[in-house]
Image 1 (spheres, one colour):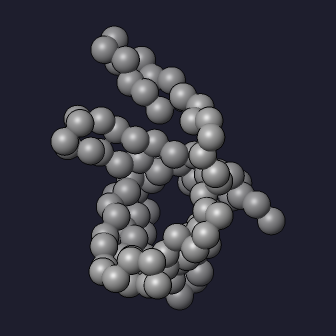
Image 2 (spheres, rainbow, N blue to C red):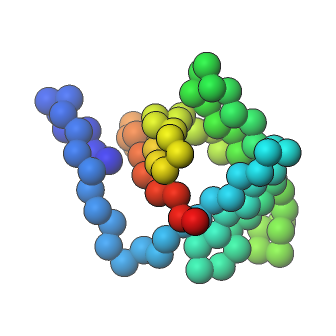
Length: 101
């Protein structure tokens, strides 16, 4: 998602990248993957603040913990749009996820 200098925004397709999948369970655990396991851990979601915090645990690929703070732009039964701010580049990154049954 790109925001122009005028304030207008548009979705920009990214070619050549694989799909990313998330699984969230009711007990506060999550897992992510692309073509390989991406990580797992615990999450906290605050519906009022529209904030999703992913606490990644060490795994066979990464031997350290990390935290991802995301804003939930949209959440429905079929769609999830997450955004994050990158202060180094002064950019907002948005990703749209669709439900796969």
